[in-house]
Length: 351
Image (cartoon, rainbow, N blue to C red):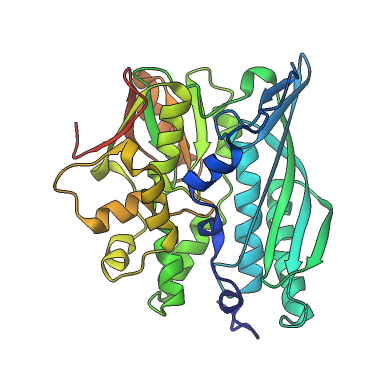
C-alpha cells in the first residue's frame, strides 16, 4: 500500500458500492418510470433490477451494456482504479457475457488532487481492463467536488447464454463465489484498524475479475446469476427471490467471510450503508431469533466488487462449486437454495 500525497477517502463522504442509493430510495425513484417500452430486442431492462441491459442484435448475438462508478474506498489511487474497474466489468460477467471494451468515467476535484494521482487511478483501471482483454476506448471527465471513477462497459454473449437474476427455479442450489466483508474492511481502513495483511486480502478479492460468470453461462444447469455488491448478500439474494417469484433460504454458517470480517464488525467497523440496507428491505427478510447484530451486519454489508451469486440445478451444485474453486475462486461454496413460496429471503442456522 503506497503512501498517497492526498488521502482519497478524506475527500469523499462515502466509498465503493457503499455509495449506492439505498434500495428503498432507488425503488421510489424508478417507480412509474418506463421499463424500456415496446422494444422486442431489449431482453433485459429495468424490470428486475438486473446487473446490466441486454439487447439482442440477431439470432446469434446479444450486446450487454452497463455502467458503474463510485467514490474511493481506499487511499492508494492505483488500487482505487483497479477496484472500480473490476467492479464495473463484473456486471457483464454476471449477465453471462464477455466484455469487449470500456469507456472511462472520471470526476475529480482538480484543485485538491495532484495530476499524478489521477493518472494512477486511470492506470489502475487500464491495468484491470488489460487483464480482462479489453481496451479503454475513451470516456468522459468532469471537475467534481468529490473524486469519482468507474467505467461504462460493453460486452456480448449468445442469446441462450444470457443469465438474469430472475430465472432461478424451485429447488435450485445457491453458490457464492467470494467472501463477504468488504464494506467492513473499508470502514476499518477509515478507522485505522486494518493492518497490511487485511488490506492485501481486501485488494485480492476486490480486484479478482468475475470472469467465471461467462463460463458458467454456457452450462444449461446454471439458471440465474447476479453479483453481490452494494445491497449486500441479503439485498441481492432478495432480488433473486423477487425476480424469480420464489423463496430463498441461506444457511448463515455456510456464507464465506473475509478472515477478519466478524472481528472487525464486532469492533464497530460497520458502514452507514449496512444500516440503510436493512432499513430498506428488512421487512422482507426473516432472521433467526437469536441472530446478533454483528452477524446481521455481515449479511447487509455492502460489497464492492463482490462475488457472484449463482442458482443452479441442485444435483450438480457441488460439482459446479468445485469447478468455480478450481478456476481461482477458493471461497466459493454452496450457501442455500431456492424454493417454491412467497418471494422472501430467509436466513437459517443450517437446514
